[in-house]
Length: 324
Ligand SMILES: [Mn+2]
Image (cartoon, rainbow, N blue to C red; front, side, top):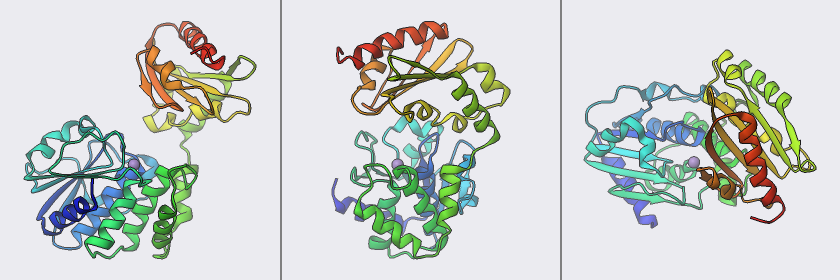
């Protein structure tokens, strides 16, 4: 990775006639905000740039400008395809063909695990969000004006990946860029509210159910909570409605490990693990066929809820005691 790669990407985009911009599946605020920002900028200067999406825009991002540039049915062929905020090519889903059929394949990302093949790839793992990289590209190498709409998209990208400037990936550069974006006069308080505070009725119900299910083990060091299939079905819950529910247990004082089980199909559970300080939950998840990071990991399990909880609690007890 060198800065020249980003300049080269900027050059290709500056001359392109048609660009397909592709964020990862289960699109988040960084992937979508960055994609829309770039599409708005490119369309302002004689380039047809489409954002290709296979899913609905998540409700928490429905305030983003530029959504008229989202295409569900892409053109057959684009001159340039751009992979955005995505380190894993399989997360392009059905759009992989469009990516591979383009004359030039570009990739801009900030994941350390990026393995995406491209003609030109720029991966900056120091960037808190892909939105930071695209802001620099637009202003430093493309000379394109950052309008208020573009600024709102990029600000949303940055707050999403930094948890509102709270995570350790936040840098002075992050704050400087956010400051420049604020200068355009965006309604940043509304963006913060939409991304972090507003919840759906379904989510409120599921939060209540999760809290009701909460159990504590090992002197309050392990929190276990769950949602039954019937809870999810009765509210027709979307993926975003259950996001972050594992944090209810994690944030409780004294808790080191939080386990949250979601019954996605009857008898089939998706497990999320979070730890606060010392337990490596990736190791725990690996024992159950999953994986992830030290402080955030996941797995899937079939069977009876009580049996799954018992098996996980056994494994976590060993980690809490420093035995594994
Ligand atoms: Mn990101």
